[in-house]
Amino acid sequence: MKRRLTKEDIRLLKYEKRNGYVFAGMILMAGVLFNLIDLVMTDIIHQHTVLVAIDMVIIGLSWMTLHRINRDLNRDLEAGYRTVRMEKVTGKMKHTAHEAGSGTLSNQEMKSIDKFQLIINQAAYDVSRDFFDKVSEGDEVEMYFAQHSHVLLGLALSEL
Image (cartoon, rainbow, N blue to C red):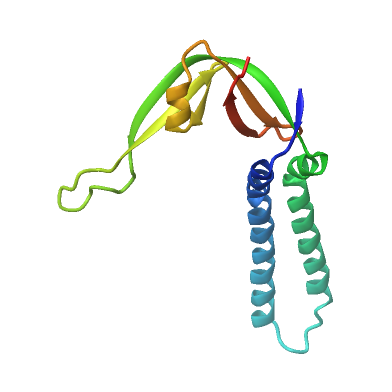
């Protein structure tokens, strides 16, 4: 079953695109570093045709990386639909984790963080405390996935 993407779904998919921008930015920064090293190490009379050619390759590589990493997310945003799957909750888990680095100074208590998960098809999905309390084992839930990237967009209690 398909449904239209909500504004929240679109925001989440755009946020997921950050990895593409980070990797493309890292490639561009490596290119800038290479340019600075070349400009410092060579004399003024040196012809920079090789540098310009390398810059073109770096810009092209950065652009291709950006579009390759974000390809499925862009297709999801263009399509405008999400896939709905009905699944049965097979288990519930509550974990108490401790914040990294807390409590290291002068014997302080470590900050505890409660994490709530539903087990569906032998996979654990993080949910809010409210949703965790609403759902019981054996209940049917609607799982919303992006059509091409298969990013989990949300969970809702089935209305059947």
